[in-house]
Length: 463
Image 1 (tube, rainbow, N blue to C red):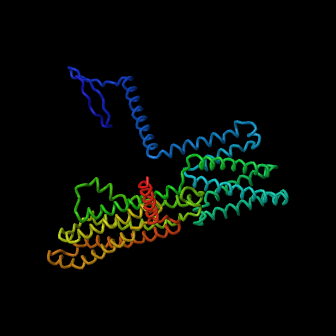
Image 2: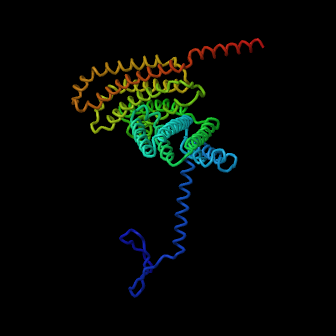
Image 3: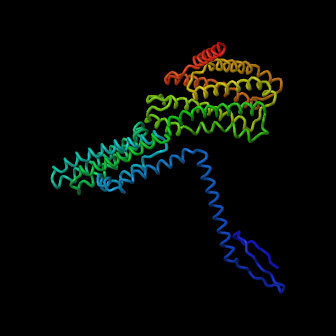
């Protein structure tokens, strides 16, 4: 008779019990162990392959970026494989390979930012190192190391301190880092090398070659623009705010607590807006380095996108507080919610209409002809809510409702009024962007389309 018992460690052992009462622990066969290991490895490989496939399918641009990096490395490696190119740059060809590895980024703006920063940092550091080396070489055998070490201390300290300056850290941090690295290498190695100028020029040329290859491939082969990503991110966040806000009002005033999946999927959209600040700032910084492309000029007002994103987060903070009212342990009486249900539902619809109209205006880069009417309807709904709140004390008195019980409803109503003011600020920011970026006039386009349609109909009638 065979039985299995669980050890204290949590594993399983097989024990054979015989008729005379004795027992013997059976050891697993090596074949079974090998089969188990093979099946475990197969499962791990399949799971990994599935994750890789999902990652590539979710954003095919990542696959394209990987192929572009591979192409850039292949091209720059020719400076090692081809003797004429290798003789031209000498042993410093590895600097070109290193430049491709550290400079090539996902977007064009990030690649240009790193490439230009690396080039300028290398040029400045090399020039200063040659100048300091010239001064040090005329300072005598004892004075030369003192001058080199002193310059290294002063310039290294000053450059490091500049990295704490906000605008330098935001745009030129990588360039300052390369400056420190290059100056240190050239300055220290120059003490033992006679042809320092030739060495600095070779390194500068290889860095320029590597950076140029990165920029050319990044711009010419399926370019991925940071400006396009930022232009898509802001409207997407506004649409998430609209969905979250609409669902919050429905959940609170309609007591729709039975559909938890729908609640989680729509209400939690505002969390993406709260967590997008770093991404927005990074994309806006990289977009400033990009050349004119598509509908975006070189001086496109990318800072205005950051302003819209900031105002959108202000709305998201209120939505988070409104969500807290929904999940509060103190539930408002049905009589109070019934009194404010229709007016708050109407206000929630107005919110979503205004926000979705703003998102559509940003996507199409056109001035909306309906936004002022939608904002007017939103303000009217806010006035209706304020008038309804005036009669709230009477309802509380009639139904013997305490202030604590009415607090969630009053807080939710106050948050809705505040959200209306913050949405209006977003509308003004979008209008400002439309003026700065020269958005097309939607009314003019509609009129032009109507005229073209009339001409076509007239031509058909003549035929």
